[in-house]
Length: 328
Image 1: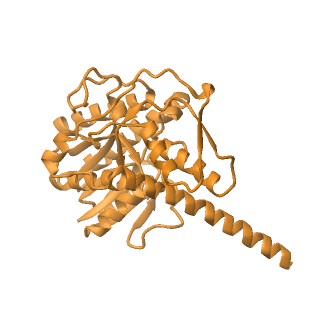
Image 2 (image 1 turned 90 degrees about the horizontal axis):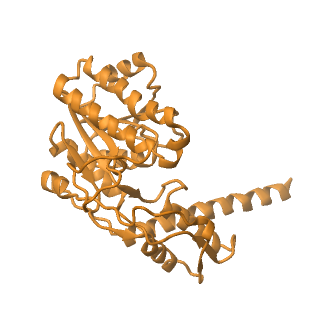
C-alpha cells in the first residue's frame, strides 16, 4: 500500500513514517522544507499548500492509496496571536488538499486520515469525552480543527469522499519539542543532572489531570484507522485515563540521580477552569482492536533519556570545539 504523509518532518510524522515502513507500506511525504535526515525508504516532496497546481501534481505522481494529513499549526498558545495563520494552515490548506483529491484520478480509491484535536470539544459536562459530545472549543486552534471536521462531513456526504477524522488527545514521546510539559520538565531535570542548573524546579499548578498517550501508540492508531476505520466517522485517539501533572513530574524526578527541589512559583499559577479532562477510546478500540502498549513510565523514561542524549551531544560538540581551537 502506498501512503502519503503531509507534514512528515514533524514530531508525529517521523514516527508515523517509521510505523508504516515497518508494516510494509511504501511511504511518501511532503514538508515545507525537506529535512536533512529521514528514513532512507521515504521519498519527500517540498510542498506549498497555497499552490493548487503543486498539490495536484504530487497527487498524480504519487497516486497514494492513503493520505495522512498531519500538516498544520498545532499550538493552542500560538493560535491566539496568529488566528489568521492558524485557520490558513488548518482549514484552507486542508481544503486545498481535499479539492485536489476530489478532482484527481485517485478520488474513488484514496482514503484520507485527517488529524483533529481534543481541543474541538472545549468544556464538557460529562467525562470521559465521547465522539458525539457537544463541541464548544475555547481557543482559535480548537475552532480551526472543529471547522475542519465540519468540512469533512460535507466532503463525505456531498462528494462521497473517503475521509476519517481522528481527534487526538495529548501526545508525548521522545523528540517532542520544548513548549510541551513532559519535554520542558525533562529538559530542566537533565540540566540539573549535568550541573548546568541549580537543583530547583519552579512550577505552577500541578493538580490538573489530562489524557496522555505515547506518540508511538498514537501513530499505530492512525494506521489501524486506515485499515479498519469507517469513512465519515470521528474517532478519539487517547489513553482513556487521567493523569495529574504532579504524577508526571514525580515520575520524571525519580529518574534523576540528583535530589531535586520543587517549588511553586506564584507567577506561574493560572486560573484552572478544567481540573480534569480525558477521553473515551471505546469506539477506536471496538472498531480497530487498538490498545495503548507503552506505559506512562516507559514513555517518560524514553523522554528523559532523549533529552539526556541531546545535552550530552551538545556537550561533546562544545568539548571538541574547544580542543580544535587549542590545536589552531
